[in-house]
Amino acid sequence: MKDTYRHQGKRQQLVKTVKKKGITDEKVLAAIGKIPRHLFMDSSFEDHAYQDKAFPIAADQTISQPYTVAFQTQLMEVKKGEKVLEIGTGSGYQTAVLCELGAKVYSIERQHELYKKTKTFLNKIGYRPKHLSFGDGYKGLPEYAPYDKIIVTAGAPEVPKDLLGQLKVGGKMVIPVGSEVQTMTLFERKSVKEFDKKEFGAFRFVPLLEDKN
Image (tube, rainbow, N blue to C red; front, side):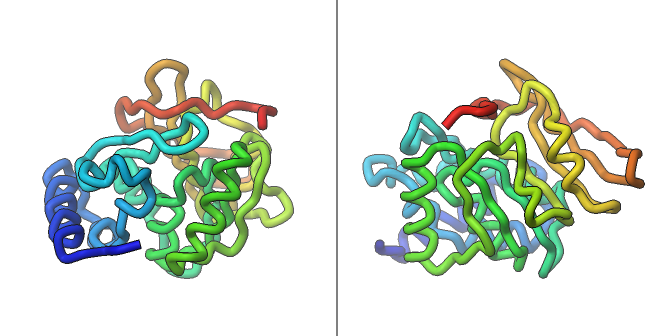
């Protein structure tokens, strides 16, 4: 569990890379610069940890590209103390970014192996989300709703209605929508029945699977 000067230097290079690609939120950049991404990955990928790329992790999942993590996080405009629901805990890297921003994070993961591994690991490196749960991301976590922000880190063929329903009025949800290639989509809840929708270009994610564990 080492974080050396070399790792820290590589992280600063990574910050420059995502900045060049258009990330301007200083708090998001600071989180990318602080979190030891190499610890979230298989040690055989350690040399690649600070490249702006996605990499395989356990259970056929991936750790998202840092730019994608930064982009989704920036779109949400997370403020300290906000309740954020994360669909797809995965490696826990996005979870750690949200914790760094001071969010109260509620996260759900459908792969049991990954859920157990990440829960232990986050605790070990000092990131403590409010609640980590094993289950179906499509359904969200209604028992803790409503949320200020919701982030979905897997590609959804369509927008899960349950998730929109768990968003506070004034809240924002960022979700990649589509089958083969996803369109990054931002929903803002204007009233009980009204949502604003904006689209932000194409991304690639692992699929968000319903009812499968």
